Image (tube, rainbow, N blue to C red; front, side, top):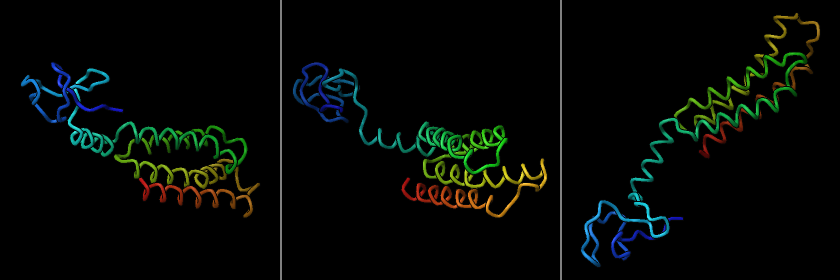
Length: 162
């Protein structure tokens, strides 16, 4: 927690935008945090810089991308055909990278969720193309369809919240 800004000379309370101390008259480039002794940013500029970093594809979107990839690695094995480990790992990593490259948190959650929602169906399609439709049944596709609906709904919800 940031304390009230203080003058570096007399330690009197000053405004975070002040350039001189009203107590001792000292000029200073910026106010100083009483606890750390470091200069205090203008709080309005700090909020604007944070919003710009989120809009510019910051580490926040990268964190969402990482979480999307981990979620995919944990959940995709349950809704994909057996013996396609390389495919679901690739799908989870690609979905995470796609989410991390978005410019906002809402877009990262929404688009990462959509990429994960499509992944099981794409993996089933690739598996059928490689091995043939021998093990295909309608009930085998119910899991991937339900997964796609739930994950895309979560992505849409996260977009409206974020």
